Image (cartoon, rainbow, N blue to C red; front, side, top):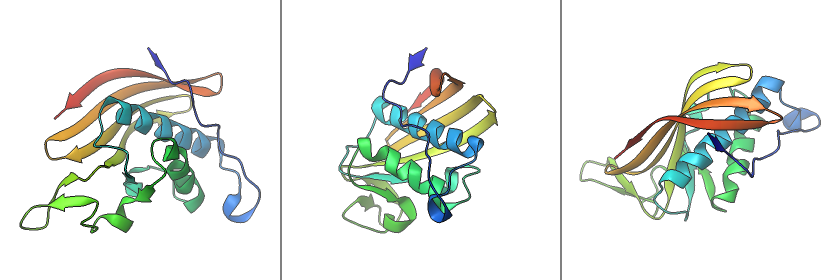
Length: 159
């Protein structure tokens, strides 16, 4: 079983845009951060930047939890972006002759495939993409215990 040591604390806040998350949203934020960090450690295209596909952050419908995920990934790189904000930046991505991205330029695209989430247990796949021939995709069984997610690798795809 793989334990993540330096987990981000569950997010908290005041009112308005910094309002506290529900327990489930806070757990999802923490899970998504830890799963993406772990996938990044398995393989990445560099830490010049991190891009996150926010639409894959299932059931995080408010802006605050999504922002907390981005903030939680700053331990990997000081430059963490929403993928949609930078996807057309030729200084960050290389594309083929018809405009399809083929690889990152000293950076990594992270996203989540949340397969199952029930209380203190989840099955989640985290993808670390850095090129058409460079990606890792570990699938984890996650158990929330003593305020932290414990991740166990169920399978691993590598290209």
